[in-house]
Image (cartoon, rainbow, N blue to C red):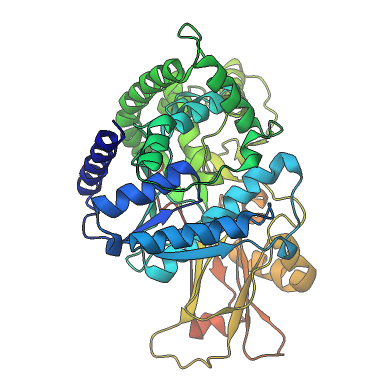
Length: 490
């Protein structure tokens, strides 16, 4: 039976690779050492050939045995003929988060390292061992967080790799989950039949982590066919939600094309407001469409790798609906904003519609980048791609470096210059661009001409600082990591 399952899995992965047009691409395998990712490596090596694969193991460094396990993974990859890299996270470089956020932060850093490997080898697709059990956990996890249709549709086969820089073709690498139709039991049987050693991470049984607790609930419910919490029941509901989402999304993309303005250089979205100010805009007139429109916009702005919770969307909806009710009744309107889910929403004025921008960061939430060479690209705040390079025909010393600051950090160094630059920008920028909430979350770029020299302000509030050499010698580009497509595909 295991041999049949393995053969079926190989054919299944081959079909997916061809359907996604990845047959001529080199693939990166995310291999932790667990049964699911070890089975993935075994299957992928037979589906596309070991020379078309690279494997990476990210060692979080939480357990004493993790380094030994990563080395063992490397030996098995060598046996399969797959090139292998180990990336070890160094927690002394960052403040270790509390246990409640440890999974989230570790996941972010893991994906960042995987993205770095993609950059090194110019890989455009990462295969992971997510299986149907993971899908059921994700559904239940999002259900208890009151996610909407978007979240309850679960993980898709393909999605953008979070926290990753674009490859040479300017496309962000994608995650492909080819094993979502297989359960954990099948992957165990494939490993056992193939004599594949795997490792069980003891922390996966620690119920202080919510996902582990949900995994335990589902595992116990799997013994009861009548339980609504067994994996089969959860996956049936998830599939229904996916169908609903696909129907809604078909019309949503066209609707947002007409009613949304995306400022990819600022990470800002503006949704149209009705000209008479009394009727709900078309994108907001239907509650179901309004929820999906807001989920798409909020997800685009905050760049999180999970959909916004329904409770957060309800806060945005409440202000929108009450705004138009008050206008229609001729009542006074308090021009209050809503800040939740990492996004601030500002009500419309005579100069702009509904504005959505990144919520003002907490103190020291956004780290100052290290010195970067000209031509390098930085992913700043997980949402904006920034590149500084010499203009064509300009000769710039190789020693020139640049950094990116948050506005709060930059104000401590260049308060006078920033205030003057803001005054100049007000004459040329759109009013929405110069709103204080928008300005507060924009990157500030400085350039250091030579080592040990004082850095100079080069870019702020979406424009080059005219008094800087950057105005004539450097090209500075800022764009959203998610492009301009508001309807998420994950």
